[in-house]
Length: 143
Image (cartoon, rainbow, N blue to C red; front, side, top):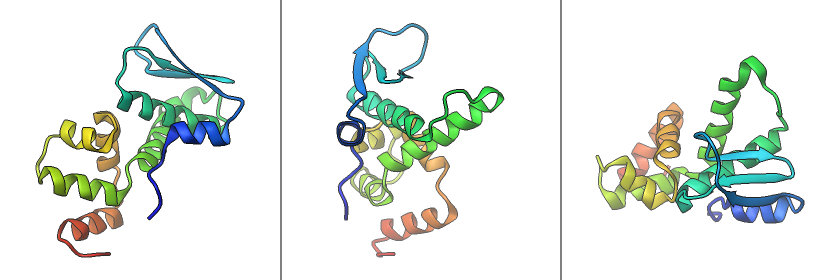
C-alpha cells in the first residue's frame, strides 16, 4: 500500500515555485490560491490547513482561475478530489474499526487528520462500489 497523500510533500515536490503562507484572512475563506502563493488562514488547525492546502493544489492542477456561473460545481469537484486524496478507503475503514461504528464525525476526522467537512463530503460521495468495499473491509473481508 502506498503512503497517504501529503499535500505538504506534494507542494514541495511538484510545485517548487509555489509559496505557502499562513496569514490572517478576512471573511470565511480558509485558503486562497493567489499564484504563485497559496495563502492559508492563520488560527486554523493542522487538519484544516492540510485539507485547505490539498484543495488549493487541486485548483492549481485543474488550472481553472475563473469558473463564473459554474463556481459551485467547480468547488464541489475540487473538494471531492481533495477529500479522495486525503481519505483513502482503507484508512477510513481502519478509523471506523478503531473508533467503533457510529462514532462521531469529529472523532473519525481527527483520526484521519482531516476536518469534519472533508470527512463528511468523502462519506457522502462514496460510490456504490466504494460503499460495498467499505462494508467488506469493516466485516473483516478483503475486497
